[in-house]
Length: 309
Image (spheres, rainbow, N blue to C red):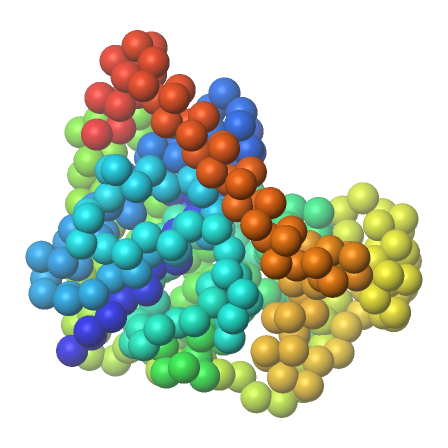
């Protein structure tokens, strides 16, 4: 019996993200993608509650962490927006969850999936111990020590293939790219995805919690050449070969922390991290308020809210 489900939601693998612009902050097509992402998560959440799951926590995990529209989600679920400090950076405290479901994620940097990247699109390829590392594997690994099993994943077909390879036994749902535009087909897609998510809870051979042991060697190749790699390597005293940073970590937790540092932080930002995270939350809240305003305009309300219902 699954008592507490953690849902990690992203936008690239959702039903309303046709291109990079739709995933970018405060673009003309971002509100539509936010609405579709919300509808996807809502379909899965309602199906899980109907199946008897007593507790669901949803983490909004794209860009600022403010993409899901709270008013359109099941009020029984706990929605966490913005990133948290704590035992699992970004997520914070897993708080007793015993299963994690990934909704709308993407493929790994350096692979051929839709908008494929790991943590940031500035990285052209991220390989660990010689193999591309997708976020589903990374997040599952840092949640594994808490006994949290990765049961379900949705995203583009390539992302689903990678999830099954990294996590044998995980249930997947391939969101086609581009997605159908007809409302009935979109509704059918979401309902099928929701049924797959519920079926994942009853999988007779579910994946065990992922907790990889041993040392980890990461090669992080930057998309824009040697200059950004040189700056980051100097900033954190790391090894570099051309446009690739070389990183060694003794544990998966150390690897995750180092990757976050490389992708998002500077020493100054790290020194004032609580203040910086508070400012970032203000940015996210402002962006989400803009999304809600756009969706309430006559043009969006008539054409899009009905379209993505």
